[in-house]
Length: 319
Image 1: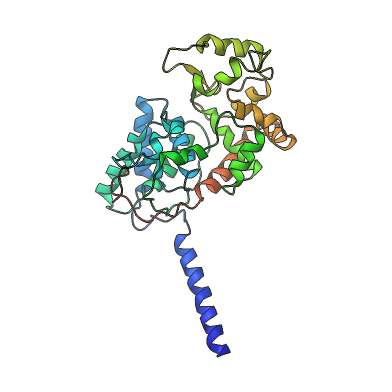
Image 2 (image 1 turned 120 degrees about the vertical axis):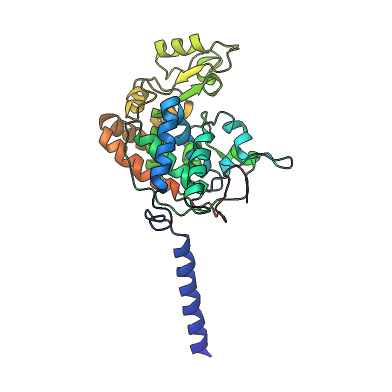
């Protein structure tokens, strides 16, 4: 009886290893089944970038917003239906764009190797290409994700908000298995892109009872933001670049942060904790150190299991 139980335990343990192994991501996942997968995604990103310089920031942000809800399962790509409001229509995601880049890559891949490359993997590859083609580092993207079938706008409230303080940020990241180091490194993604007035108006208007402006913000910088984002702003797309080189992936974000020229409350929050402040200084002083940490944290984030079940044939709808 004991021998049977031991055999059963060993068999169960072996099955567990095999099951976990089948879900493991691999950098050479498509080498045999779709060897041109990465080059195809890169081509789609390059073509889009040529026509629209905001594409890289959009693609990088897209992966963050995908992985932080339900894991990296491509659920951010799904369209809303009559019976369900999807993630992309949740308030934090209204400004997400460049979904067509993923669609174009998917269409080319379906013609080349049907039903093989997941939409979630395309998002991860496109984010890497967005960084590299903007002058940042490249890395081997782990692949083999499956696409999820659930996408709910209501769940987007779980995304870390631009008004978060350091404890709220730490909690948000730790819930996803990400460390304080990952928080600071991934915040560096703000080296690319643009922010609408609504996301930082809390720092430049009615900050406190007796202060209009956040005192941690450089005075002339705050004044420049107020000029483009007046109290009752009526310009729909008004806002500011996240750093002074918004189309180049560099460590300028950290340098400006130390000068009091950050955009979001969540950026400034990185200077309110000794550990995060030390990392900000480290990354401001060394682009190499930042890029190394960013790559490690992006790989870690992209490994958040989405529990997907299929390879979507169209990234906007379930099979």
